[in-house]
Length: 205
Image (cartoon, rainbow, N blue to C red; front, side, top):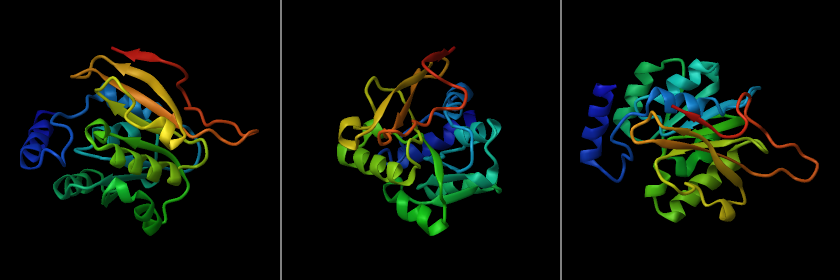
């Protein structure tokens, strides 16, 4: 983990606006995010794979490698992910263009989006664009899972027309982090898509 954090810090120094984190997510945080993924068929799409701690946790939680897609825009981290996870489809690209990236690869249906992107440090327009792209790709009611170190919602819920809140607080992470779960309400008569093994708030650590 030290070597991975050192790599992230080096990349951050080169381009602090492009690399959002200077430390690797802890195993506890990665597992807390992976727990929110629902069971069933469909692809899991990870945004901002970084050095791969969340990728590792998603696979450990039971997602098959061929059903996991990781989107990473930094070329160095993209190559690292390709080497570490040769059976996972890793895409070099920007989450702001998620729909076209997934369409190009024939990725459908998507049962969950798991994001480690530093949304709170981005402009509101970018937050909205990424959220809109993700929910356009997701199946109705499927979750958008996001962690943040901040106190506020990383996504503009009202503007996107989605519901969401904190599902987990990971105190063992440095700094402590919150895992947010969002979904777009289904039409009347539809049933919301709940996580497989996690209902309500719990604290890790």
